[in-house]
Image (cartoon, rainbow, N blue to C red):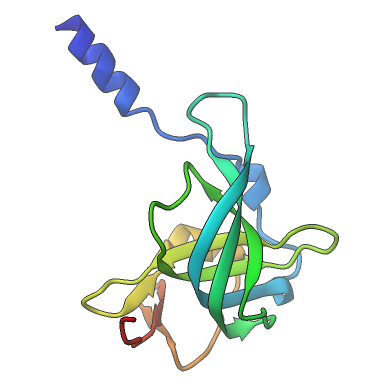
Length: 154
């Protein structure tokens, strides 16, 4: 019984990330809202020494389309906080911060719901950015920012 409780405690330990890294940007003009396909996540950089700490991976993206903010190329790379790489390609909505002299940083990401074709960001992430992008594909459900993309499967 004690072993079962210990195993449950180990499994339910949340990942640790660095809140300092994701403080609100000084200049919201450095942000982009894009939709893109994941390609790969490599070069993990641990954010702390604990075993349950997340890492900043170098994410590579393709078929990107900038909806608001600083235009990004159709193929780009940016650091993204993850526990491990994706197990398959995904279409994501991303808020990316341009950081002068550094790699761009994904500040928020959301996957698309197959039924609604919407990707909705966590309100805590978008509120912290203090940025309210506008575009025809950007919709709001109360305080939740979502992106609508009707894209045919390949």
